[in-house]
Amino acid sequence: MKNLRLKLARMEKDMSQTELAKRVGVTRQTIGMVESGDYNPTLNLCIQICKELGKTLDDLFWEDNDNEMV
Amino acid sequence: MKNLRLKLARMEKDMSQTELAKRVGVTRQTIGMVESGDYNPTLNLCIQICKELGKTLDDLFWEDNDNEMV
DNA sequence: ACTTTATGTAAAATATACTTGACATTCATT
DNA sequence: AATGAATGTCAAGTATATTTTACATAAAGT
Image (cartoon, rainbow over all chains, first blue to last red; front, side, top):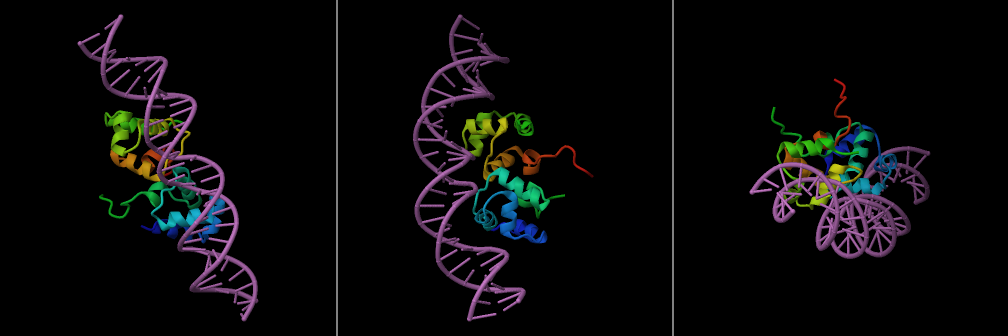
């Protein structure tokens, strides 16, 4: 399933896939696949993406962020 | 650098590398390399490890967990 | 209409995560 | 002293993440 949190975080920074890719040091296609989901990126790639977007791993890549029990 | 948080979380569960590996579905060597650091595991592997140890990605794989600014 | 920017997708090549099998060391137990 | 459990490491193989090149579509601007 798609990673909408990532896509949203990127758009909040007014960044295109191409620009995020350049900053992270991968290709545009790789960013596209991560956003499309059904993909298994490496930890370092996830971390770089998070840093560029000012988010943490849990923010963008940890499931069940929505229904967290207080 | 070594991932001491992971090693600690595993030992808190009284789990050997071999046992964690079996539960996660990888080999003992892979777990060893993740703990040794200087290694770039996939996101799915990290998530599986977190789930087995009752932790989140930020808990085990996000840097700067220590000096977080309030 | 034409060009540019952003994105989706696909096939083949390359880099690297992960496996397999094996040997070595340390520590606890008998 | 001998055995077994836990871990470190290494070399060669397999699976897959990522690149490269390319073509296609839609939206926005001139």
